[in-house]
Length: 588
Image (tube, rainbow, N blue to C red; front, side):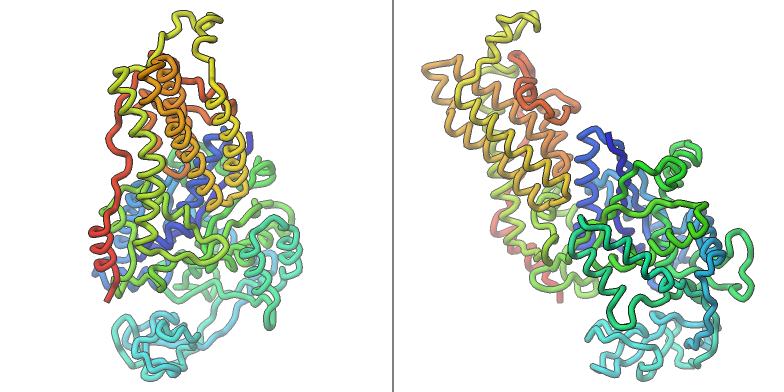
């Protein structure tokens, strides 16, 4: 049994996330976590909301709420949506937690002790009317490149040009709209991650099993231009973790907070501590996952994220972890594997909240149950390249994969059996399970069943290998092929024909097909957890083990076992409904 720590990139707090966010980290992490648990491994799956920074303050102001109240409300919204999509987090925390305050301040203190923090004087825009320095995103104006009137101080979202606030034409405060601005000097702390460049390069070079997407982005940031640059880790904001050197004040840093990209990855550790607190466990319970000297030496740590998050998780966060262990006293766990993803686009373009373009998590759940979305997203997960959501593709995934293959198989088998044999599997149930006669009676497979078992053995091995390697699109394709095996067997064996001349053969086919339903439920659970539960419930089962012994799994349900005909597992999406949804989410 392995011990595997899994984290998915923290969703930002300012609003409901779209399907691209979901498939870029949380959903694939959940599929992997569910698979490992099914194989008997010890898994801890951690996530949290990322709550600090300028966008949170702006979103709260727009909503007319104190930022702390806004973040608490949106945390619950995101938690409910995670539950709605059956994301099996062991803990879903908050980066604003007390645990993260303490750990972030602790890491900053350790980095300062290591000589990896430098105090830098900077010139920043100050709003006289607001009485505060304005971070880049708090400044708006006209883009000097394309003339867009609402460009931010860091980037124009219209032409994507990177900007400095002083470049904006007619700059104004995004808080009050005031143009009474001036440039003043302020001091900030920088993480001297450039000093760890060689150590980071050696660490990344050793990760020969990482996806090319992960390593190529990391090496680009390490080596392009002037190479890895030091990074500011403080901001002039009200909402955030106050700057302290461990438990001590930090002279000159009064009124400042740590930059969100410094504290957010530390929340992975803090959320694990929150999990221990929530479950009534001592600090040792979370430390055994994160401290190499306290039990984490045998942990495999896997991170899931979109490609935009890769630089921070391959460079800045590891620099924090490595730097904090400058004297060997705090050997924190470094990530073993980073599974990164490209982008999911919507009908050839980007998702857009402001334009009403694309589907967001709450909207999706209002249209169809979560397994419909889980299946399409994971069978089209953007691993090698960007993926593109279209309603036509979604309709095909629902109708041709879920309804016509898996749903059709379960429906045909259960309806036929109930109509011809009643509510129990046909045959004489063994009165003495150890009786050779009874076992022999049930164990007689024809060449057809033997061929199916052999085919399934090969396909299940491939399915498991793909999941182990986190090749999730390939795993979804293999799972569908496993479902197809059952349909082809059923069509060929034709129990509805056999029953006319050989009722015993029809009964044997039916029993075998029911064991395929049980097998499919177990194998499908990582991708389709709710559907798997419904399939097992129809068989009168609360759970079932992973098929480490395939032949035993295909004999698990004996004659006499009760069952129910379940409601239709998947409703088809017709052309009229598809057209309505295309129009509704096309945007303005």
